[in-house]
Image 1: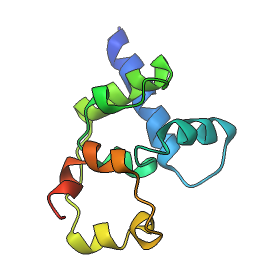
Image 2 (image 1 turned 90 degrees about the vertical axis):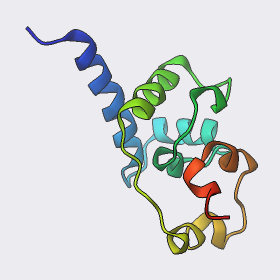
Image 3 (image 1 turned 180 degrees about the vertical axis):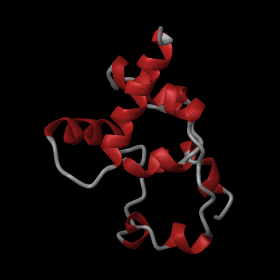
Image 4 (image 1 turned 90 degrees about the horizontal axis):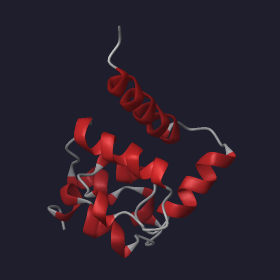
Length: 108
């Protein structure tokens, strides 16, 4: 018999994995709206605390981010990758992004 909590956690991780894929969907637009001041999709590549996520984020997504933050391995970004990111090119980096992104803070 499968471990039920593992199945639930897997579905939560798959939700955020699908969010990171390059296709449009209404549910992705809603999640992007909630995360717009926190970095959006690049947040998935950061070491972040669940407490730093917006209070208005639905509980389901908070649970997804909680599992993601415990189980995911964050890639080490180079300074060039950080500075060439679209947010830097547009000079529209949200202030909360720096608070929640431990890896990126070390480069600046």
